[in-house]
Image 1 (spheres, helix red, strand yellow):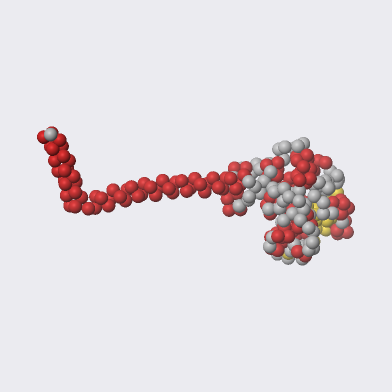
Image 2 (cartoon, one colour; image 1 turned 180 degrees about the vertical axis):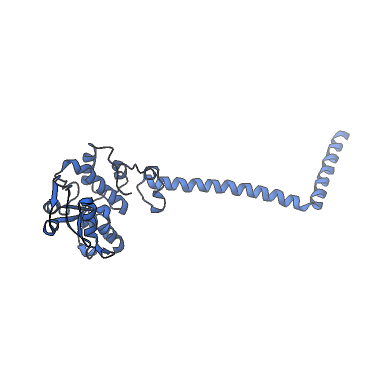
Length: 265
């Protein structure tokens, strides 16, 4: 009995001592609380960071493109994005109605930069060192025409005039696969982006019309891989979708060139 009383007395004395110490040193209690709170805050912050990162990764894997961070993905950072990989990022949907489409919904003609039209700039890009200029105008040159595969020599303005600037992703096709829901400024970018422009044979361009990869491919089989890779790149860059038939056609082409890289993204 005496031992029990002694234990109780000892405990009481210890408790009184702690209370007196805290009364004399109140800042110690506040410091302890701050440390505990700080530790909890750091732990919560870390968990939140992990959640945000996982959302970014998940949204990208679901095919949702965010310009602010997509450039940080490994396959874009090292410049080795494969067309087949980018294709898998594209949404697959049916065509929207063509209602309301006109070229004016995209642009009113080739824009000028420093007095030179975009058409002339694309011709100069394709003809390279062979381009002969009069001011801004390309009046002669030669190059390997991509759609036919023929080496074309152009000796006059009239010859050059037969070369057309093609939208690799046709504007009508873009309209039916997402562009009609975008701001006109974005549609203008699609129509005037050099990534989406090629100097091609006029007859071949008319044959293509507004077809996608499911309905038209270049006669030049050696160029088909580059052609569909460029289409995939343009559609990815501007958030356009593909139809199931179009995707299957592109997959079939890329099966012969699995190492074909995307362009300009």
